[in-house]
Length: 298
Image (cartoon, rainbow, N blue to C red; front, side, top):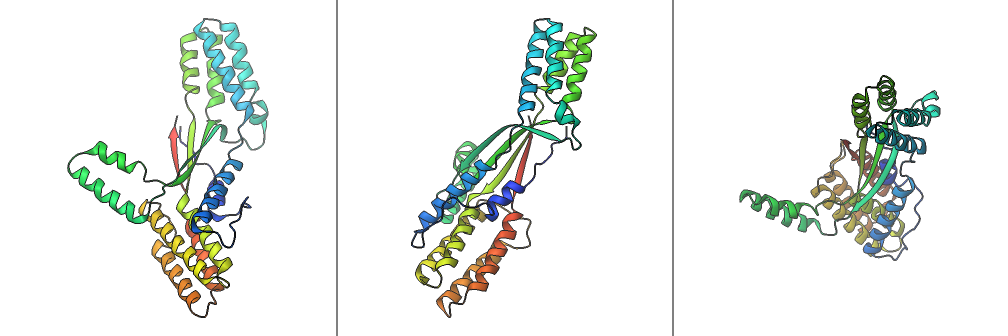
């Protein structure tokens, strides 16, 4: 079965800040406080936009599993009833004009935040390269594991392209007393799911909020505005060194150059409004195209 990538709407929403943030950093907030609020809001947004699980699909799977158990006990009558019930749970969905390709049955959010600096990443990578040259793969692997900073939203879905047909085929085999074939078909149907993981890089979330915070205080507190931009620059370095790549024509270097241009303007005439908007637009476009998804056939 071909795995199907879910919509990137959630990831792009988290990255571009379309969702109304639950908390806003104070104008005198430290960089650490801005980052903490940024990550907290991103977690809340991810939770709020988890895929809505389809109860009918979950109940249908339960019935299908009970049908398999019944077949193990050679109870063909009960197996038939459970298969009919499993199909019945999906009737409304199957009868709709636009039958969905996937029915979400489980969802999980994982947060792995890297708290080190870009220089520490360089040191770790140099150490890893040395270990690999000595064939110390497991030691290198242990050092590599923490090198991620992302929110992963995994959705497990039931494929409507194959699942209902499998139930019908199993029912047909039961009716013809071909229990072993029915069991085989059901076992496959109950183990074939599509798992999609949406990845949202945390350093880019931090950079976004730090740039926004800098724009807010640039006129009244140059020192703080520059500190926020320094931290945003560091967050972009972390994202780049951790390997979060984008298909955008904008590059990390271009974003860093734009940050430097804003900082120069703040130190001078301090008419940085347009430069801030350009920077925000560039980062938004860059992030929208940095989204990646991992597909796994369960």
